[in-house]
Length: 401
Ligand SMILES: *Cc1c(COP(=O)(O)O)cnc(C)c1O
Image (cartoon, protein in one colour):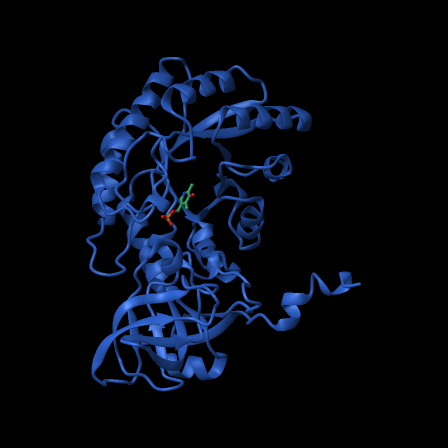
């Protein structure tokens, strides 16, 4: 049990709290589902990029899926071996490609024909052969929120099958490129297995057709996207997930790479916030808290649901909007939520906040970002201190004339 009250007293609010043992459990359950097969669990760093969290996964043997050179640097700083790091993303700059090649990571995941040309040219300049995979967009509807769907042709990610095939041939014929993998990632918070399996079938067929052209790929990268329980959604069991994917690979001797983000960290995280005020606008009840959209953006961005608990209070519940102090009507943590009447300084625990929580935070309204705390073996320790006003102005102050 995490002593939220004590943590609030010690570290203040708003506060992010991560249960590292929960992360370990999630990592093991997914890893063991692929046991007996060549596989790599490459943690999607963007889900929670705190260095101590990365280090925790590094110690469990994880690789990393990164979407900026900053994340690649974080992954390496966190102790993830370079040969387990993948660099994905639709818009890599030249300097990012160059640094990734110089750092000799596992491969760059290429997302357009134009990008393949840049990787080719930069590898030529460096006099090396760049390992690449190509992100295929299999045009499968993952049946998730449109903002986190990525595997449809309407989405900006990846390339269609025909383009992918041409790119592989192009890569094979270049002395600067070494096509080693294929990648797809159809969306996030996936709760249905059928679209994942359909995508895998399409991509495995592509791999077979490339074999006929003498292009042998070693890595079958299925992306991330495993959904978690925020409310009462049904989720995919790791074992069923692994079986569905492995069954599409018959006859192919490839290493499976998974890029779980949310699955590993979402339900290991809590966002702790304090009640400032109750107010009533006509019939509408608002609970104003000290955490806001700049701390936890998911409700505002995706209308995402987070289960919220009021600590040490069992007064009668009525519906309320739980809102932060930021000057936007879109600033809320929950709408029409059943919550007991609160008092000043009551604590609210926002659950499932370990993925896409802190990392999506900002300094909007000149609010310093929350502190982050890790809990392991009953001990809590600070893993990022709260941002101060001085931190926020540090990059501007010297330029004021
Ligand atoms: C975001 C992302 C992931 C992780 O997604 P989750 O839904 O958090 O598992 C994996 N791979 C790529 C390429 C991504 O962009």
